[in-house]
Length: 358
Image (cartoon, rainbow, N blue to C red; front, side, top):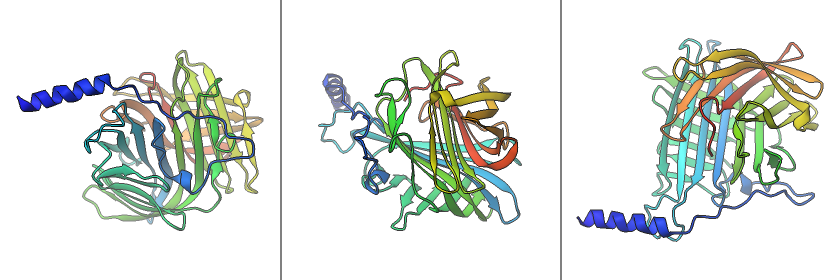
């Protein structure tokens, strides 16, 4: 009876507490950009944040694999003044996936926990995100250690920078819609030299080498009310360049917003506005589990340049309804530029099962 009374009191207190006010994303003053190294760390005043590593690696035997490791931080509606150490002020969520053509589908796992007790956290000031035995840690030399034990595989990877951070949009202020508030703070680290080991369940660790793309993004309001989801690409190009492109889709499938950034081998960055970025599907795949139909192969136009995107395998759908509530397609793809091999990338597509809610 006492437990029930305490539970009711806690619920009433939560219900009466004022809804939280999250920090807004606003344009950066002229000449200013995101502040490193502080912005490598967490931003708990904002509603949603993620660190997203996607890469292609090759084993000693020459087999190519794709991998994804994502850590999400989500601020909740819990009363910030609640003194309890158990109050779920921040949630930490992890997704991990391995794309191996010998399996025929994506191997993936997920977990989540409230922040606290040293078991789950996202630290301010530098990238250090932990969820039980899953962790991403940025070290003094700028490299990342990524370690996790998923249900069907284990990763121990080192991601070393080879070029400067790529600030997306205007110095890291990245528009996602027609209204200035529909935006995020966003930077990427392309061409991270990747070494380490991957072990399948019951197998021995295999040494791998390759390249990783890492995104870090945080916001409080990203999508238009009519938005259903997005298509996003992060590509490590063979010439040392990098390409990021995305479009936000309406509930009818029309383009609400789009943007791309292309850094060439010399380091020159070209930004493309909504009218200069076009996603055109070239191959559809229907999931046997959700019946969602994804454009797993597509052509992306940035200005006058056309990029052809082809999946490593069609079935790279990830069902994360136990953690973030979303089902999305996140897969390894190859990239051609105007019909010629140009690099390796990851393609993400959300909102094909139901509209995304952040």
